[in-house]
Image (tube, rainbow over all chains, first blue to last red; front, side, top):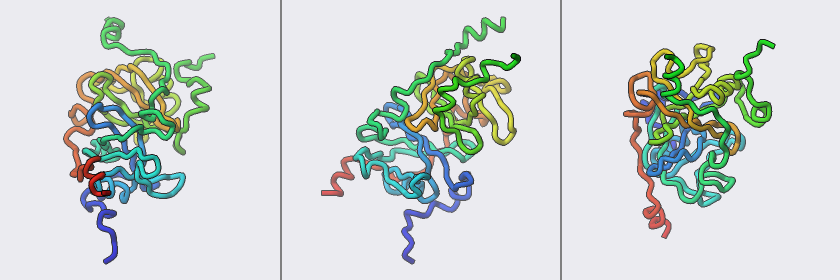
Length: 131
Length: 131
C-alpha cells in the first residue's frame, strides 16, 4: 500500500464535512494569539488531512489546480495551532502562528488597508429608534 | 423611481468584487473587540449593500433563497462596526458587536466546542528538523 496516509482524512470527519460542488471547503485562518483574521483559503479533503497532521497549513488552489503549502515560496509559513469546524460543518477555522505576513501583497493580513466605508450600527441608538 | 437605494451597491465596489457563480461572496463575521471569529455567512450584492448602509448584518440564505437580517428571529443582532475586502476581492471581513450568541445552536460562536484534533506545528521544531 503506497498511499500516503497523511493524505487521507479521518473517515468520520470526511463524512461529516460538507464540501462544495467543487469538493472544497473554506478555511478561515486566524493568528492564534493576536486573533487577527489573516486570510481565507480553500481546502479539499487532502489539503485538510495534511493541515491536521503535519503542523503546516495546506490549501488547494482552484486557479492553479494544485496543492500548495503556505510559505514554501514566500517563507511566510503558517504553523497550525488548532482547528475547528462550524455548526453546519461547511467552514473551517484554523488558528496558526503566521511567520511574517499572510498576504502575497506584503500586508500583514489579506484585509489590511482594504476597509470599506460603513454606516456603524449601535445597540443603544437602535433601542432609541424603537422607543 | 421606487428602487430602494440601500439595496444598490456602489458601482465601483460592485465591479471590483468577485462573486461566485451563484452571485455570492463569503463574509467572515468577527466580534470587533474580543476578535472572536463568530461565523461565516454568504452575501450577494443586495445583502452587502444593506450591511454597509444600515448598521446591521444581512445575509442571503442559499437554502431558503431569501435575505435575512441577523437577529430578527433570535434577537442575536449583529451591529456593524467595520468592513473590509481581501486582496483578491472575493472575501469580506465584517467586524460587529454581537448581541448574545452568534450560533443558532446557542454557542457563542459557530466554532465553539467544535475543535478537531491537530498535530501542532512549531517554528523552532521545524528549524530543528531542517538542521
